[in-house]
Length: 79
Image 1 (cartoon, helix red, strand yellow):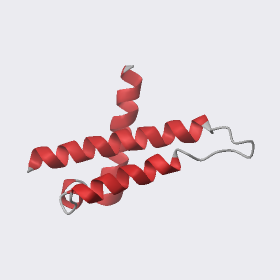
Image 2: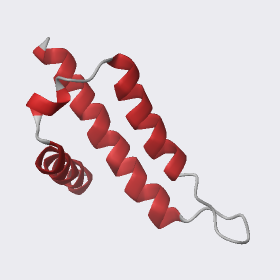
Image 3: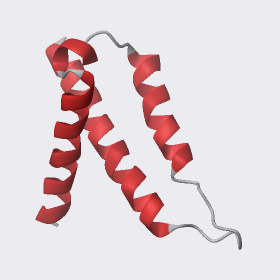
Image 4: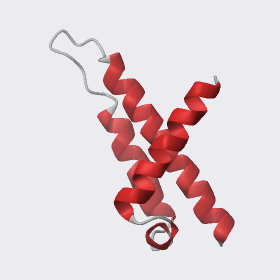
């Protein structure tokens, strides 16, 4: 299980690097955080031609959702 937390932390680091970290995150509000999380949840719904879920895509997006949830919690804690 520790590997999962490491993977989420690495994704969180990528998000901070890409978007600018807490200074950028603090520009958002609750609806924005929910929209970010819902957008990645929707990407997890990607299905193949036979309507089976692509579990690699699903897992990747769930890691992103977890990292975004962590970012949102950090945002709340800074307030």
